[in-house]
Each structure stands twice: as C-alpha cells, then as structure tokens.
Image (cartoon, rainbow, N blue to C red; front, side, top):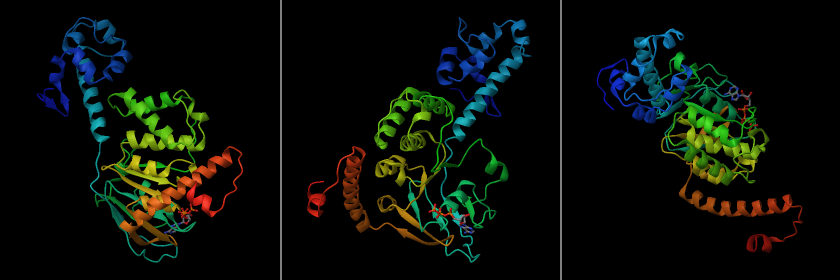
Length: 349
Ligand SMILES: Nc1ncnc2c1ncn2[C@@H]1O[C@H](COP(=O)(O)OP(=O)(O)OP(=O)(O)O)[C@@H](O)[C@H]1O
C-alpha cells in the first residue's frame, strides 16, 4: 500500500483505498466501526467515500464530524500497526552483568546470552536459580537482592520501557499456573492470537492445540474449559502458546520436569532463532538438551558449562532411559505391578 502523505506514521493515502482491501489488511477496523455503530462496507468504494456518506447527526452522537473521523481512523490504523511492529521486537544479545552472592562477595562472572540459545540454570535447592530468572524478568538494575544488572543489547532500559506493560521483553512461565478465566482452550487461544494481531488465527490455534496435546501426557479437547485442565496440561498449553504466540524475545521457564510433559519435545518446540530461552532445572536430560548451563552456588554464578558433543551422545542414552521410566510410570498409573530385573529393564522395556 502507498507510503505517500505519511505524517507521524499516519498514511492519509489510505483514505483512497477500497474498503474491501482495507478490511482485509486491517481486520481490526471492523471493531473500530462497530464501536461507532457504522456498517463499514455498504456500497461506497473507498474509505473517504464511506466517511463522506455518513450523516452529520450520526457522527455528532460520538462527538465527531467527517474530518475528525477521517483523522481518527487513520490514527487508529497507525497505532495498531505500530503495536504489531513493536511486538516483533528483536534482541541482539542480553548481558547479565555480575552482581553479588548471598554473602555479598562479587559474583564470579556474568554471562551474555544470544537469540537461538536454550540455556539451563542449575544449582542446589535454594542456591538462587529463581533469583536469576527473576532478575532477568524485571531487567534488574542493581536493585534486587543479587545486585545484578540485566542489559538488553548491553544497555540499561529506560524506566518507562522497563515498567511498561505495552511490550514485554521477557515472558515467564512459572511453576504455579492457575487459570481463572472461564473459557474453553479454543476461545483462550483465539483471544490471545487476536490480541497479538496475527494472521490466520484458526490455523495458528489448531497448531498450538496440537502441540500442547503432543507435550501433555493426557490428551484434552479444544472445547475443554481451561480451568479444568490438569497441571501438566495447562503447562503444556502455556509452553505451546509461548512458542507460537509470545512476542517476547526472552522466555523464562521455572522447572518443567515435574509437570509430566515431554521435556525434550518442549525444548525443541521452544527453540527459535529469535528467542533466548532459560530453564531452571535439576533434570539431567533437560540440562543436556540445552546449549549451555549456568551453574549457581550460594546466590552467585560460579561457572558456565558448555554442553559437550560427548554429552549430547549421553543425552540420547538418557532419553532412552527416560522413555523406560515413562513406561513404568504408565504402569503405575494403570494400577499394574512393577516386577522386573535388570535384564528386563534394559532389554524389554
Ligand atoms: N545473590 C543473592 N543475594 C541475596 N539473596 C539471594 C541471592 N540469590 C538468591 N537469593 C535469595 O535466596 C533465596 C533462595 O533463592 P532461590 O529461590 O532463587 O533458589 P532456587 O535455587 O530457585 O531454589 P529451588 O531449587 O528450591 O527452587 C531467595 O530468598 C533469594 O531471594
């Protein structure tokens, strides 16, 4: 579409475009007109003609006239398009500047993370894994217990962007996710997709639902109420939702090992060349599925371990073991006995 007559991002040339074309390209215009009780597409061909055809009495109910309505509709399109572009914000890298451990001693190191990486955060219980994720979530600027600085593209974010809910740099999936809305899975996904202004919503909704079912141990239906999903099912749904719909270039996940979902598939779903994914975990299979592991002790980063090629081979062995454990879990779920020896475990499970 024409980029002529653009002022402050407002494209006045849009007034001369056909209504059909505009409604197709900017589907949210339907809501704009419906709020003003206007049928957007009767006979007129262009937006300007449709606005001109409206009676001054109708417009005055909304405190508008032809000129102000033209200005408002153009500004609305410009703002919505700005949101759409913002939500595709990119990050070149994320610097986590060293802070202090729990004793107030300088942390051994910081780390720089790059899009396309899945990094695990490992360490004993209470060592400070969640604190690190929380520092990243709030883009800490020396103002959290660890004193770390988290710098998108190496620069501190202005307070306005840091605390604004408009565009979130970081999405977090925490351990306790409870839905409170009374919606079906399908309606929930549709609502989220609509709020993200994405194209082809039905197809995206189906894709997310199918991925969530693949991750969850127990299948569920599109018309299941989200409030009645099990812990594992809702976690699976949120992971698939983040993978396909989240605009945030950084995704934080606080332990998925206990959710009963397919962890390796979850990682490959989240692997995206535009996203940095951090997972706090105690699980060896998850740790080996990541590119690097941040090792935390006593509140501070003490090492960053790169996953070796040899370890990736061990991961295949671990995945096999994990599958066997899954089969045993399944037997427990079905109320069956678990009698086997080493030979049966390794050869027949
Ligand atoms: N560098 C630090 N300086 C001061 N306090 C810290 C630091 N790191 C962590 N803490 C505090 O230590 C406590 C335990 O940390 P945290 O919950 O992050 O541990 P964790 O490794 O996630 O534990 P778990 O494995 O049990 O979930 C928290 O109260 C946290 O705020």
